[in-house]
Length: 540
Image (cartoon, rainbow, N blue to C red; front, top):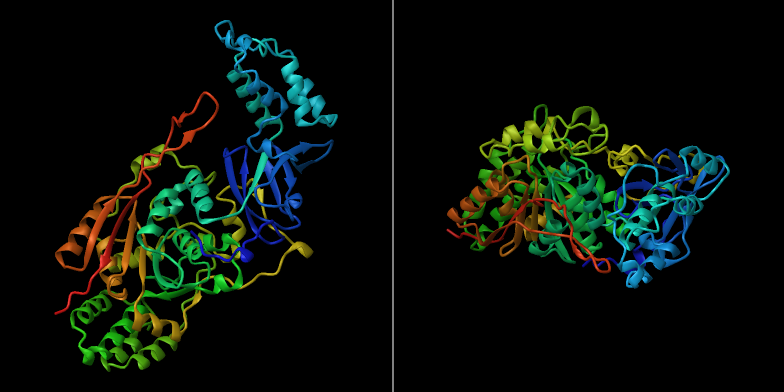
């Protein structure tokens, strides 16, 4: 459970805040940033989102058409959250009556002759300014077969017409769960097919809690970092590390509407700096009886980190490590050329798991999923770095966050100009200072989370494990089982961890309705795999 102060959690949607719009009870979900010119398109109808400003999260709105425009109107009754009107409630009341029980659908013939109201009549009603409820009532009144249907069929008919002529929008607060759920439904490749129950399991196995120092290495667009940030609530620090010279985007963190203190707790640092500082700190402690095994592991990790072309990052830090001076190492790291984040990711990057992704509608094709193969576990670190520089997630950079809010869906337009644009607070993901790196190097991180499916799990973990303090938990996520199995074998062989578990979570949703509660007929086959364990020190 998140430890964020209740006073810092937004209870209402405000100008400039990100919101999740749940359209027609989960049929479509999209993110939007509220501004004076923000719009939402449902079907062929477009309306502004100005009516959402100042409304509490959890409110339900219905799109009502006027003569020349449409608008969102908040529904007054809480009972209408599931889209039930008075007619549906009457249907549920009469379900147990003998008259309804005797009905069945045997005599119904689908010949498109039961409805006497033509499409021209419906268009004329729309031009005259008829509401969605009036159109639905007219369809029911002109249906020759409605009264002969069963109660369940009548409710299904009403729900179908309501989605078409009076769509409803649920205003939701973005959270780690809702972000993961929305992306998993719309485009799961962007989050590495990580399901929301898998994300929750990772937070639990990694023992993510307040006053912790969490190390995260991911390429899921910031999903893991967002979940850790929400769990810590500003009490602790998060270091989102990376291999490449260009920092991969973590735009999903910005969807959480974080306060200033929580946003500043999210820091970023290249892995090379962390390894060099940690090795230097362990050298300085060697005289107090610390074994050489950790230093040897870190030295091997540092040697495997290939230096990018035309870059001297880490060279001064390595020289300081040789001189056994942690203060010199941190100072050298702080004077290196800063690593800047790519501001135009779309021009240089594509999706790592499926480079041939069709981004026109953001929908995962079955043929694309079948053709995907697990990356080779023998890929070297240098190949991983070169691949990561050329291919990353196709999430927008920070200057194009509005496009990221749309989940690849061009039916929401959260762009804004003019006076409706709210002032921006501090962005999460600032570069870590020398003091932060010095603290992590001496104390070690309390937890580690890795979610980089394009990298070899063992190659990454053997470099990250020494950065943890003793008895610290770690979790590695991958949509494939084999890389984690090989990593688990290497961890056991080298006596680097205990309590190793390779887990595949399983989740199934249920429909809960009167007289027809049952599991959903369709569900995801898998939400990925997790490898968890506890780091131990192999003293020599």
